[in-house]
Amino acid sequence: MLRIFLLFFLATGPQLFSQQATSSPPADLELPDAPSAIRQPYDSTVASSSKPASTLVRPAELSIQDSKSKPPRVVDRQFLLLSALNFGAMIADIEMTQYKLSPTVREGNPLFGSHPSREMMYEMSLPVVFATTMWSRQLKKNAPHSKRWMIVPIVGASVHTAAVIWNAHY
Image (cartoon, rainbow, N blue to C red; front, side):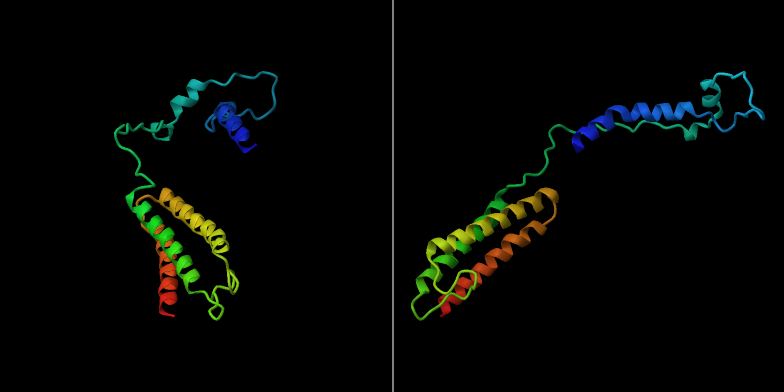
């Protein structure tokens, strides 16, 4: 619906604004004191010649861009490396947790329960890591020269790596 409105506005907007501008008489023409039956037509040459050149609207200058310049790639080597690091740390965390689980050792994450299965841990972790990777991709797409997109996979990989170290220690 919004697209239809925008298309309608873009198609009819210049016509509406041009009619508005030409239908009102300029301020320097005098109006009669009393109503009369004789009306004089509006002369556009008088109005255009009385305005100074600085008030005229000029079209915007066009700039020609080099066809060889491409926008920076979103999925590049650095993005793939950090995403793989995040996924690898998640896999290492799950496998180390499964290796260390025993009847006396419990899982510390309350979302997984005390003795989660490997499948359930992957079912819950993979969508979260995938969503954070897509979030990081969107951050990089919106600001390609900023390094803020790196925060998401680095934090994710750091949390999983800390969990692997914790599991290895105990």
